[in-house]
Image (cartoon, rainbow, N blue to C red):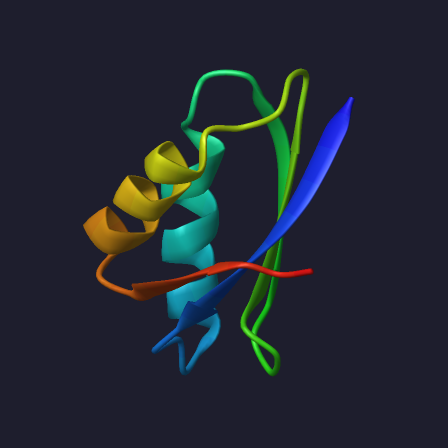
Amino acid sequence: MSQTTFTVTGMTCGHCVASVGEEVGAIDGVTDVAVDLPTGAVTVTSAEPVDEARVRAAVEEAGYTFAGQRG
């Protein structure tokens, strides 16, 4: 199992959280997505390390700004 946390900006409500979670959760190999609205943290759990470019594309598809990996 791999767990990586990214920062996403522009989320303002529960709908935003659901949109980001749905798009990122659709990435192959992702088993769980936890989105924290107040901090913008998006923690992705996957079988193998997830490709940051794929997470960026999913976040942007949802309409939000990908600010990079935390850490």
